[in-house]
Length: 141
Image (cartoon, rainbow, N blue to C red; front, side):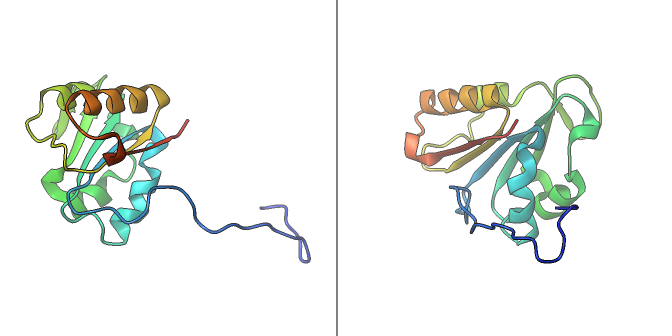
């Protein structure tokens, strides 16, 4: 876009996809740049009542963590695989999903991030009794 000139034509589409307004019992699950769709949701006031599981290898890769801390408080959980530190949960999101009593079939789960994570988390949720229709996923590379 930086090279557009006056009079150039630009094709723009309306928003699309399945990441739209989420119910209050929604769980947002993201790794890496997959956090992107949840930023605008949090900024627009949709974070209330939701839980965010955010995974990264290193603490500096928790993009927008201050926004999520402010909007979600203790419902913003950061999983870090290569570092330990204050406020970080050591390990992977998948371990939490396998062991948590909070995973409920009636909740909606929005997954976005690395393809391997999305596939693995989807399978874990299905194994935990979550209906396929309650799992909405997008892959970000």
